[in-house]
Image 1: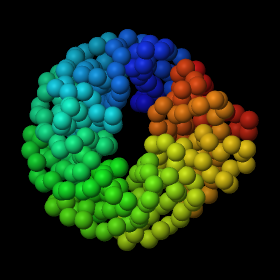
Image 2: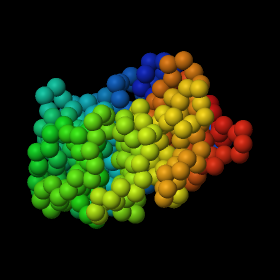
Image 3: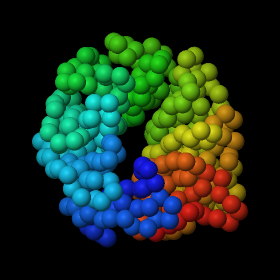
Image 4: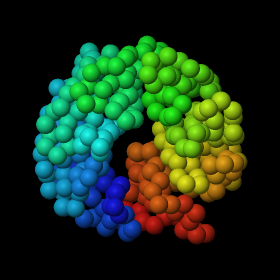
Amino acid sequence: MADGEVYIGNVDPNPGPKIVGLDATDGSERWSVSIEEAYHYTSTVIGELLVAAYGEKVISLDRKSGEQEWTATLSGTVSRTEMTAVSAETLVLVPEDSRQDAALTAFDAATGVQQWSTPLAGHTVDAPAVQGNSAFVASESELYHLNIEDGSMVWGQSVENVALGPRPTAEGIVVAANGALTVHDADTGERLQTLDNYNGEAYGIALADGTVYWLTSESLAAISIEDGTEEWRLEAQGCQEGLCVGQDTIVAPVQYEEFELETTWPTIAAFDRETGDVRWYYHIDGFDMVFTSPPVLVDGAVYFTANTIDSVGVLGDIPPEGDSGLFEG
């Protein structure tokens, strides 16, 4: 989402693979572009362009009109994670997989020309992250620090069973791996400290003002990155990936016994950043319903997609009583 527009992509045969630009206030369609079927879709906004990747393709669309600007081809296929825009360098970073290996590939956002591609061991597990002239990315068994200008490797650090990350902070690089939420030195990759432990699945990491908010199948917690102090923890269980931070709230898809619901899943909820108190929650009815994208919090509204709606659902940060959302296609 950017500048009052929402962009969604569908690569399933039903209702038909396409990318759609919607008005963020009322959900009206501004443009639609047909694309090919694929196993995964990811996109990012950079300047006046929407750059999307699916299957073996990377394409650039004008955000206002949907007109295609350029097309590039990957050596493999786009990974089941997200791509990253680097506005300062006018680059997009696309994680890609092949049968045996993986790579992080950089394209010039203006022209689609490939700038570099760096091989990775194993499949990428999360979106690449950028801090200054550095790009950080993790495979299933390795954490990498790359030079953003040419993709050369600064260091690689063996890390078992990476689930989420990396997330760069002033204190270091935050990673969830092998049952632990850890901080690594950005210059060397050395493990500095353990912030928390988990036994099940890790579903989300978000950073704000020196605090890491993180969601697992066991709890939702806020932990100080500097010293590992637990600020609060709730037995709100994550069931799908997705965690976003706003100015005063964090939003996540969770099930929580404190909700006054007969069935606590599927539910999107907002929690106070400082205390963890529940601000609001919204349960979505429907048989075998799942969220098809993580919730996105923008200007006090939460945007989400699900397999039971045709377009995008929107929930206000603090909606009026009885109001389920701004629009739902």
